[in-house]
Image (tube, rainbow, N blue to C red; front, side):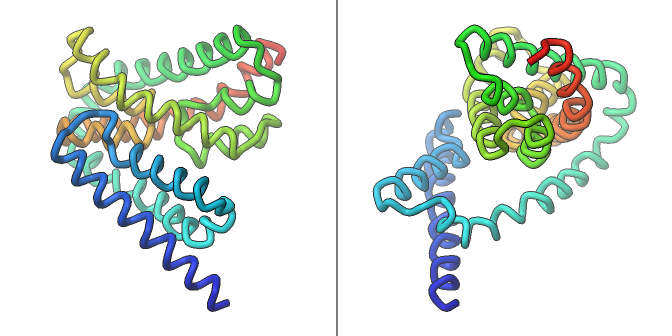
Length: 231
């Protein structure tokens, strides 16, 4: 019991320390690929590999941090409430844009997976890659995929979105709060919403809506995609 308590405190402290210093680095240089969620994750994975520490051992403390995901998502209701007029005035483009984003995200995932000859299990795990992690894992399990692998694909999609997203937004000259918010929320879910926070309150609100509705739309559309493409 004491050993588990020590491991929990150690890995909680290690995770927060890694994130704190990587956040300072990001504030100093502000490059997208230095986002603390990405760099801190890399440091933790590297530490586990070098020390030979199993993932299950890390999660003795990591699951306490993981349990904070729920309250963090709920906290997004604050900017959402403050920007409710903006969202209600643009309800149709917001809903249609999110729906299109979910469809393209799933279709492109299946197309690439088949192009590279992925197995059925891998495709089912990849399908909900643009949905926030807890929902993606549940959807993948129901479809017959591997939930832990789905979480990895979600992270890859999120990190890719915050690194490549700003470049595409600049190239396409998308500067409106709705366009920026929907792009980050629908393509990069929670990590994208954290990135949208840097742009402003309106972008964050739209991104949180896009993230939430993407999860809802994705939950219904994932089985449809499986049926259509006869995976």
